[in-house]
Image 1 (tube, rainbow, N blue to C red):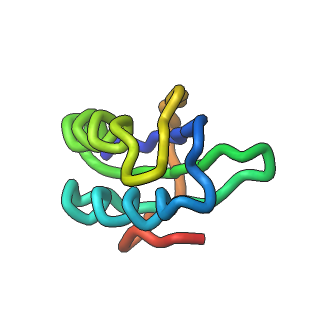
Image 2 (image 1 turned 90 degrees about the vertical axis):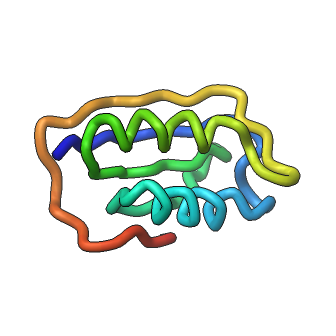
Image 3 (image 1 turned 45 degrees about the horizontal axis):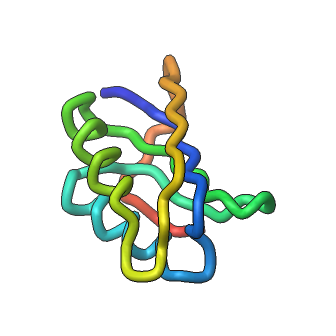
Length: 89
């Protein structure tokens, strides 16, 4: 199981982006959470198999409705807390 910290930059707050991320995470079997950051970005902690995380990253990069993704940063972690689902914080 791999763990990624993902930071998404763009117009991703106030446009339903976290809800879309949660929907996509459930489709890919991702566990963890998504939350807004004070600088206007969105932080995602995602746990799953590496191939699922790759697909998840591609899916959330397209934006959604009024959301616009300008940049995605990924940091791969050695380990993290084990999550049972994917939640919005």
